[in-house]
Amino acid sequence: MFLPSTLRFMVLAGVGSAILTVSPAAAGEITTRVAGCAEGSCLVVTGHRAEAEAAVSINGRAVHTQGGRKWRAQVPVETLREWSLPMARTITVSITDRGIRRDSEARLPIGLLGHAEDLAYLVISVK
Image (tube, rainbow, N blue to C red; front, side, top):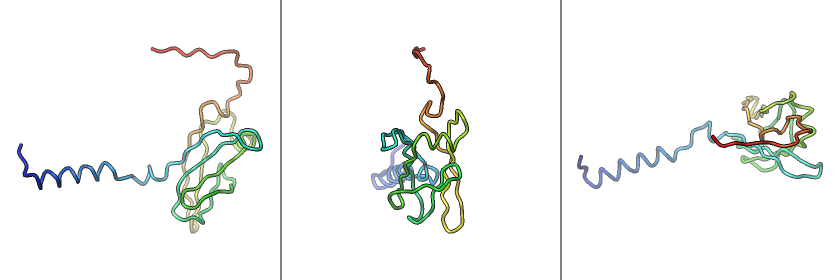
């Protein structure tokens, strides 16, 4: 099908803007990673919030955050073990702004809260 160049540009621009649009769920995604800290190993949790003053909690416990709307919190792994169920694979991150609380589940790095201290070796095979 032949489209005039102006119409073709408008169609491509519309498709491009639809692809670049970030959904609210993606914008509010919470990420986690392990990093070294003064306490040994810490879980670093990052995310976005509508207001810089919004309170952040992890598994129901308030945490100190750094940053504004793009925030970051650091929790020692041992503290996280106390706050979580054994073998947990996710944490609940709550952001409370103007009395409205929004809960999100964030995946933990694989094996973070596992208790495999006696692991002699690990075999990974490709199928």
